[in-house]
Length: 117
Image 1 (cartoon, rainbow, N blue to C red):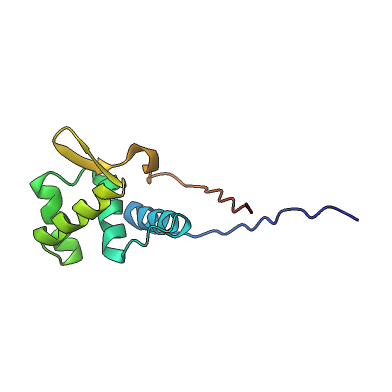
Image 2: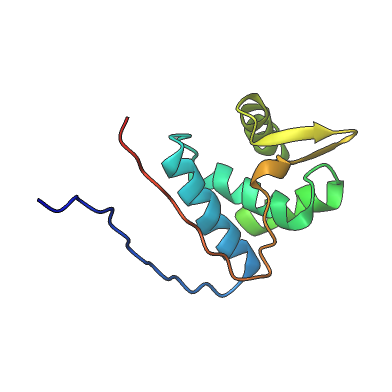
């Protein structure tokens, strides 16, 4: 009997901007790790990853303008994302955890391995 081999499936998705690539990446990360992030939380993480931090007033205002939200909503999301380690405080800045920041100006290839046990 021949041993069962793993399955390889390749998916390709083309996005038009860095922020859309970042949103797709954090959506996948959330799903694979059962983080249950909302669309708005994913948008904030992606935006923060692209901008470098969400602490500067101009970054917060830009996020509010683009996504039609408010500063108190951002604060609530930041609080939740810091608790689960997605966002971290770096001095006076709130940034995306370095472990999950990529260069979204480049093509990204992800390998996701789902194993038994």
